[in-house]
Length: 445
Image (cartoon, rainbow, N blue to C red):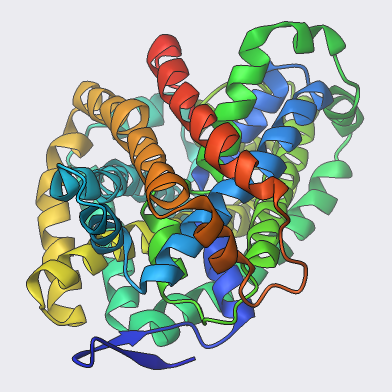
């Protein structure tokens, strides 16, 4: 697709191929949550039993949400902020300007704290390359590293890498980067999977994952956490996937693209779980260790493993790819909104957003309490509200019949009339419930 004229003035970039679009969407969806959060939740909430509500939610609601966000972006040929504002203003809905900025505000907030964590991943990748883990206590190192001054450098590097990629644009930057990173990530995961499953004692971890503990399905928390995982893992926030949709070809098969995105996102999460949990069992480590799974359990595994230097290096390289492919989408959603508001060119806008993000994120790097409060506000309140606003805007205000028509344009297997009730009532209601549950449980994403 190259570029297209918008309003006869500005040229709008686009993806060159359906594969490039899907890989970019998979890149956005596959992130750190697929690695530490899914593996941890799978271990914590009943093993294979957790997969039942997770698959139900991600394939029914995840695909519905993605189709809506892709469709919204493509229908208006604009990112979230401009597209939502236009739809609301057309129907003379009060507060259009304020409501339209919330999804972008949410994704910009995620970009800020997420880069702090990406910085940690980059640091651990560098330590893997240098084989530093063999000489240190992994647990005490993490405590001394978090909140220290050196985290600022690694956070800056994370933002810098994303900024450089985005200056090249959609087809030469976003698409090209994901065309390299995503196939490489899955190849590395398969190599690591083979290594993990051949470790002595790994069979206990496989049983832990494959034998369902059905009693967990009677506990509401299992369903709540599966819902949170399903919603947040596919990048539903009312902004990120909308902007990718706005770059999609008019004949792109949206239903197929949504299903592919969800499938490969779920596959990445399951592969990560089957790498980490059997390996944790093999070395007598806690498979349900929470966020520290990535920064304590995993380095300890590679420290103990024969060939751990090599496997640790390629593992953290793949996690860098997963993380950067997600920050690309977050920064693009933010930068596109800024470009549409200021009429600045891409290079100038992206560099400006990168510099501003760096300075705002410094306090988050240095103060873990502030990091926790900020990330909670964004993920519990702002981002889920953005999802709800985008869904109501497209399925209610724009009109669910028109929405389905847009989604079906170019589809080999169009979604039927049933989609309208699913999108307008079920998805919108569940989007609201996600906000309520997030507040009640202190976060489910």
